[in-house]
Structure formats: structure tokens, C-alpha cells
Image (cartoon, rainbow, N blue to C red):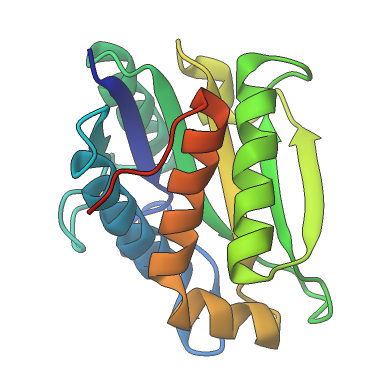
Amino acid sequence: MAIKIFIDQGHNPETVNAGAEGFGLREQDINYNVGIYLANILNNDPRFEARTSRTTPTEILGYNNTSSLQARVQMANEWPANYFISLHCNASTNPDYNGTEVYVAQAYSQAYYLAEYVLNAIVTRVGTRDNGVRINPTLYVLRNTTMPAILVEMGYITNYEDAQKLRDDQYQFAYAIYEGLLEYFGLDPVQQ
């Protein structure tokens, strides 16, 4: 049985639930691309099966912020996925804020341990700063999914160095998340 991973590319391409922007980049575009890369990597490994919340760059989920989040959670719950990974880029009014953090609903859960592996793999492969695994039970997608769920803030789109990585290293972010999943499950990479 393949491990079913639902990849949620956070935010919509425009209007409803659009994401952050910085240095000419749009969060929703980065999230979309990293999600597609990750799905392709996972689907080329017979031990995994992956689906994405957005299947085209222009697809808009829901008609407001809440319904957009509901749609993502519903797809994962109805599949049903074994794990849920939501992809995001962070933003701050302080341009010095940088690094990667991963959010989970509760400490020392399956999601928490997966988050540790994913965070470590991103920091190691992409070279972002390690901002730790953070607990936030109020995040909609973490609270309402029926499987272990993590929300990855890959980097700060408002920080120049992070923005360059988010622009140039999208495949590396995806591959790092794959590496984190392999570490979590104690698996070796597939020889491609």
C-alpha cells in the first residue's frame, strides 16, 4: 500500500485567499510550483501516492478565505490521505526576518516528528535558517484534517536572501521535503 500524501499549495492565484508578495514574487506561484515538483517526485516513488490541492496554476479554490481552506481539507479527508503537507512562504514587515519554520497542531505528535525531519532536510539542502517546529492549533488546515498535518513556511518572501532561494531553488525545496518524508519513514531514496 502506497503512503498517500496530500500536498496543499497554500493560497489562490488571485482575489480570494491570495498570498504574500515580495521582490516581484508571489507566494501562491511558488507554493504551486513546489507542490507540483513534490507530487512528481513522490509519484515517481512507488512507495508513495501524491495529490495536490491545485492542479493548474490558475485554479481558484473556494469563494472566500474560509471556503478555500475548507475545500483543501475536504479533498484530503475524503481521499483519505495518510499525511497532509501545506506549502507556504512567510512574510514580515521586517526585511531581516528569514528562515524556515514548520507548524503543527500539537507537540510530540506524528505531525511534530514529521515536521522535525522536513525542517531539517530543508535547512540542510536549501541553506535556510532553522526557525524550529512551532505549535499552532488555531491554523485551519492543521485543526480540521483527519490525518497528521504540517504547514511548511519555506522562507520569507520579504527577505532578499530567502526570496532568491524561493525563486531559484523550488525543486530543491520539494526534494528536501521528500528527503524529510524518507527520513521519517526510515526509507532510502529510490534509484531514478
